[in-house]
Amino acid sequence: MGTTNFSEFLSQLTPGFTQVLDVNLKEEDYIIIDLSENNVELGKVDISSSRAFSNYIAEYLNAFEKKVAFGGYSEVRKLYKRSELFTTSEDEDSNRNIHLGLDFWADAHTDVLAVLDGRIHSFNDNSSFGDYGPTIILEHEFEEKKFYSLYGHLSKSSLNGLVPGSSVKKGEKIAELGTPEENGDYAPHLHFQIIEDLVEKIGDFPGVTSRRELDFYLQNCPDPNYLLKLKNS
Image (cartoon, rainbow, N blue to C red):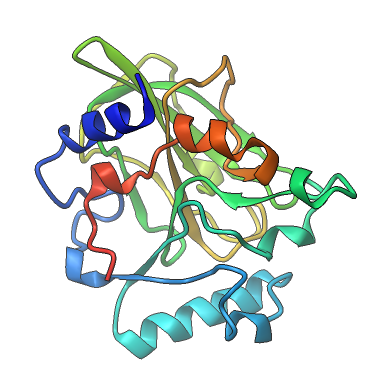
């Protein structure tokens, strides 16, 4: 299934705004945020510090009287330069700095919801500095089309008692957002990503890519907002 076809397929699975966080949050509680390398204000923040970054997010939300800041699909970010996980090469085109999911910046312990009916495919605590921390991958199948959703930066307790293959319902609580101490050392947020081909990975999948591999990953991981339908303004 080509990129456009898969994106259209996803968009047909939900009739409108679809929740991925706390069931009490409304669409008007969300606001888009720019965390790209072009954000001049972010350039004044010590983004290597999860505390400083958390403060930046909190001030942004307070300024607009919102509860969740979201965005980041295909965004080029400087944030990843702090971790060797992403910068392994002298060749800039091979270093990973382009984000492949949507991020939802909110308070630690905020509920995370399944966006569609599915089953637990796999989970893992990806505990390296700058990684996802606790991560859950769900498998979905509609009209004989199989694909996956990934939820990263969760609390460690979110992985307790999970059983691969067990079913989940759309809107069901599956996890909570983790603190910086357990989520890979980030300000609390959910990394949410759609994946067409998991290429046999278990409990993990790249959420950031390089320019060199961008075409493959943008095709394999379309914008999750085709499902969620949050207004980009």
